[in-house]
Image (cartoon, rainbow, N blue to C red; front, side, top):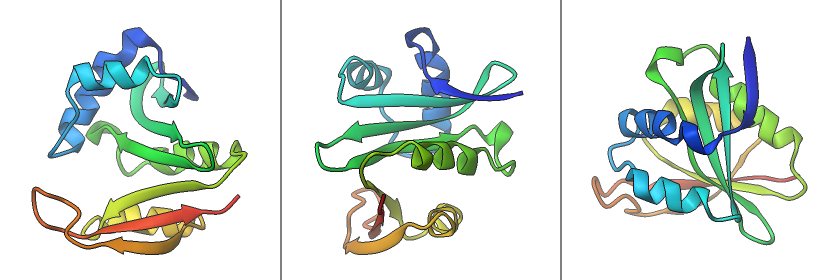
Length: 141
């Protein structure tokens, strides 16, 4: 059974495990805990049989929401859980949503474009680890 809800504090280590596997430059657990304690950030998880399968971290930036992180555990990839999670967020918005993605992340780009995100900018050399460009997308509510 799939459930989408806010991540609870005692589930941050599970989120951290997915974070470390999913990102070359993953956040430290202390960084995640700091963000979690800040009311401007919202942590949502998608759970499969009460087990965290993926998450999204949103920042309320006054006039727009920003996706800070979105990831699905490798054990659950390819099942549409990222799309379900993002669709849930898009259905609950009261303002626009922005995100940024590496130009090499074709899977994510296809997902974002299939959900109606529009490319609004390219950040040249945005990623310090590779010098790769980042694409900025906007979903207009």
